[in-house]
Length: 272
Image 1: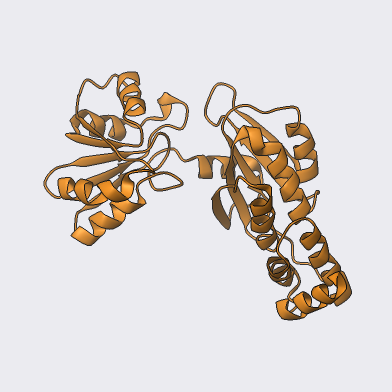
Image 2: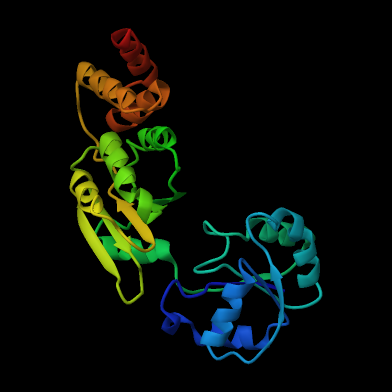
């Protein structure tokens, strides 16, 4: 059997009794970083010394068949450094291979930065989308956010603290500076902090410097009724902010219900 085990995202006290039991009995542990896995075992007082196999972004595709074959004959536990394997962490290729080989799978549920931030943000939780790590380059961010400008579900992103201010500014350009959002920092740790406000306000706050792991939660778009001229102006605005014109037209079409082709052609004529 292959066991996908969620691990604490900061506070070791969040480790469940079941996780402790599984780690104590494990023959093989596949870990994103074997050193982190060793620290986890030590921190939880686990005396078991299982075989440790490194399975990370750079070798997962090559290791997937080997790990699945091991799990066909013994219990293998798959860990990421924190949270649930496969969710913006290694593990998907291993799971896909295990399914293909008919290996039994189960999950040891536990902490998740995504749902923890969502619960704390104070934004709608009935429908949401997880967008993972934000693109590193400004142009790619602008394009990605432009495509999401009309998304009506609450959005959850991961971002590094060094790029947080720039990312929040790019979000403000694409979504509007007054769009509600929350930055959730150092979740479950000693210095946990949640800062809520409009994207422009949060960008200004982040300019002073932010430390620790960050999750950004952004409210979805509110459907608006605008004239074709106003919608075209919005497409042009997004285009000037760095979003590809086609993506901007698609996003504004989602916001307004207008045809993206009409918005694209009108914005192209206005831009020219």
